[in-house]
Length: 109
Image (cartoon, rainbow, N blue to C red; front, top):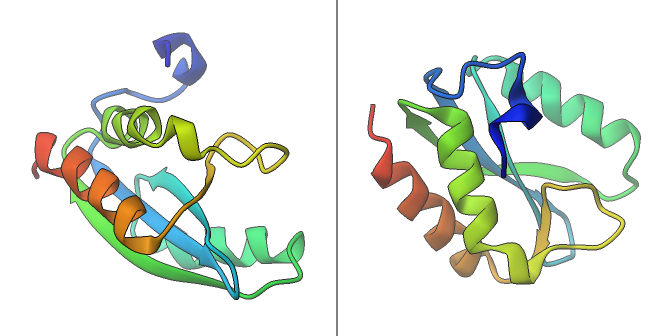
């Protein structure tokens, strides 16, 4: 993922990478936020376009949120959900969490 995708965001800005699950499915969103309180707001915004209940499953505080997020996305690229945007993946929670946790470990806060 090239840095030009994030020209408005400091690639090394600290924040959070998170996992949101779509209820009754193995669909997960892996995203980033620079403010912890934005996570609840983010879920509400996503919920407006999704008939399945969305739940925050896990979050990790990191020193470089976009770099950590990109790392997790690269690891999960074979599980990408087509038509679900660039941050949705289909797999078990364990697989998703392992990828996100490994990315978070590379960018400790």
